[in-house]
Length: 234
Image (cartoon, rainbow, N blue to C red; front, side, top):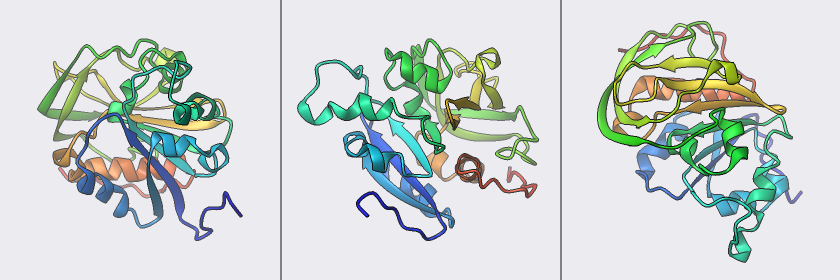
């Protein structure tokens, strides 16, 4: 079958990158250490090249930061970007928009609708910040049983994810150089969406609470969320 993924009982995850450099081994280690996940790293043009396969993953994680608008005049091999991406939400697959993926395609209303922030203009970014993370919803499957923690990460100054726009807030911060909303969920067409502003480099990738949130986020998106209480480690 040309579009088949392994039927091994694991969560099949596409991890889409491009348009922004990142520390490769520690980033992929986040997914490699999830025992229930098979993950497939790929550039955006690879992900969008086969629309049927793109829709076959249980979860797709967008960790890219391309800034052109789909529909602009593109090289022939990129013309499939908009047609494939605009199918997001037509399947039941989960969608994770991670860190700089939140500010990808800043002039594309479709991506703003997906993320749940109308104006995603990045006002400023700040490296190596000590971020005090607060749990806004301790009962959600992604954050159940967690308590606040502090981690080192890059922060963004930009508009927040407003609950009035259909966003359910999970994690927040009062850091003066950060947007207040750090993690939220929403529904987009037929799909669950999990947006997480964290995730710049090894300092964050190695944080056990970041990993716990990512693991639970993938499970929730795949509709395999754990019922266990969990505890934060810091």
